[in-house]
Image (cartoon, rainbow, N blue to C red):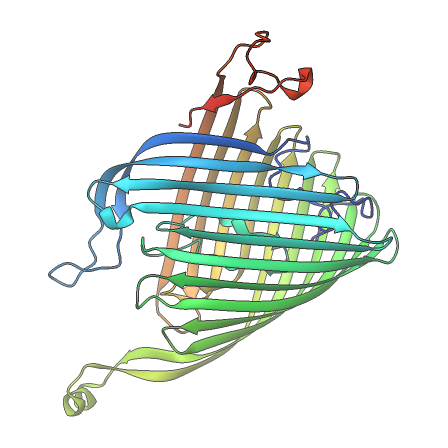
Length: 412
């Protein structure tokens, strides 16, 4: 949650809220860490690989398979006097011995920048793109602020290749030290390789106002319009949302954010239905299609608690909102709970732990609910390739002593 509008610009001195303040992309804790590159090789065992295909009986059959994966990651940020640049990239290639359809390249990148262009104006932008066979997870990858988002296939039902790209841009006007107004636009698209899983294209615009009561408390109101277009099927969704928001910091380390939203959802599409026995006998088929029109007034919101230490971030959140779905469930209400811990040592190791649970309910295109639960952890010790003090080794020097060190890391 939060963002980087005003990050590092000196115009906002309050808790993270609606794109003001926040840590930004590639930052862990509040210590300034440079952009880092690491690589790793690991073995995997997956007990539930579900491809978009059926067996001889017409049933989906999950596969279990061992495999291997090589990864490359680049993450970090660079602060300027009045600007900020952050990057978060993870890529690699995986191979499974049995489920060969799930082998292939997996890439995801998120880049953000923010800069003060005049005495009162700050411009911000964020872009993300990726391709993967299994994007399930990483709920916070596309979070921009409490009032906007970029659609990415984070809750896929099938292990089928998907491609996604999205961008957002915003302009924030700081009237004074207490009042600020932001205007933003977003656009994103998802393409799925499976022929009968729906593709999606979205765009939206939002505006909000934040009033800083004091250095520790801010209040905000927002309005957002979003439009989802679906391909391979006939359908689209319009969403209008208004929200009230508050952010409160407790000391230097703790922050609490609360959001409450009201949404109007309008969907037009086509869905499959089972025909009555008499009609089925006359037509010679058991199913057909009907035009769907769904209009709902819904509520949503989010509660997030975050603690920021020198080189670590601990966070947890509970939220409810509308998502464009996963290709099978289209235009759905998504409820989720997640928690994460990230620690970055400047010299020897880093640790990341996350857990999440979500439940998605379709708004008319399909029946039933889709639930996901996940837990993940990564520990990356680092070992220097050259000893400190050997001034004859050219890649040993590092910034503190005018020397640079090359390191290798192992990820478990």
